[in-house]
Amino acid sequence: MSKVPVIAIDGPSGAGKGAVAQALAEKLNYHLLDSGAVYRAAGLHAMENGADLTDEASVVASLESMRATFIPHADGVKVYLAGIDVTGKLRSEATAEAASQVAVMARVRAALLDEQRSFRTQPGLIADGRDMGSVVFPDACVKVYLSASAEVRAARRAKQLKEKGMEVTISSLMKDISARDERDCSREHSPLVASQDALQIDSSSMSIEEVVEQILLAVAKTGSISVACS
Ligand code: C5P
Image: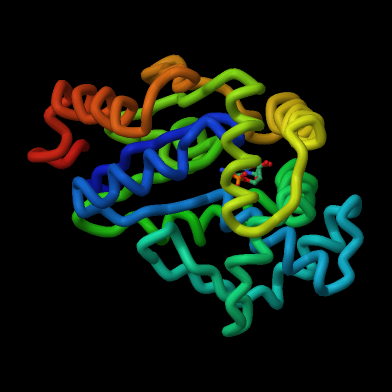
């Protein structure tokens, strides 16, 4: 088993995982895996290559030609498909929907496992997603399940999208987020669940800094930063 420490942060869309993961990665000088971006890249690539998003074999076949690069950046991660910057496209609701559709497919999830695990390099990794603690890095030193009410999550998402110049309404976002939550939680393979050993945090009325502080306290208790976990 690898000795590189991993802090896994799972939870639904809009719970604040991205901002928390980014802040933790900066504080600890760790690498960052935005696994949602990996699924979004897969969904976007499949869509752009004319795959049938309801057909597993068609999506898996399209992934064979996917050449994705993830470059850390001050605002998160920059994503390139075959050398073309698709970071902006990746954030659209259409791509989120495609990601959520392909994410229910077992063979797609299996095909993306190595890509995600390759981010685990010294001195450590902050992994943000839905199944980081349960499937991808079950030996993570610290597992966090970050949630927030659906209203708060939709409002946060609307703010993020508006800042990127995209026009959205809270009510349509609530509908989209609920549909994706439902699909993420009820799918057969790697559903979104809080691992029994996860620290559960409801960020509805907390700032990013408060959440980060709480996670760092949990990390300090395990002693997993100075001594890599085994
Ligand atoms: O986190 P983000 O909203 O970018 O993720 C987009 C979609 O990718 C999610 O709705 C989910 O269906 C899927 N996903 C997943 N497993 C992960 C990360 C994301 O199934 N570890």
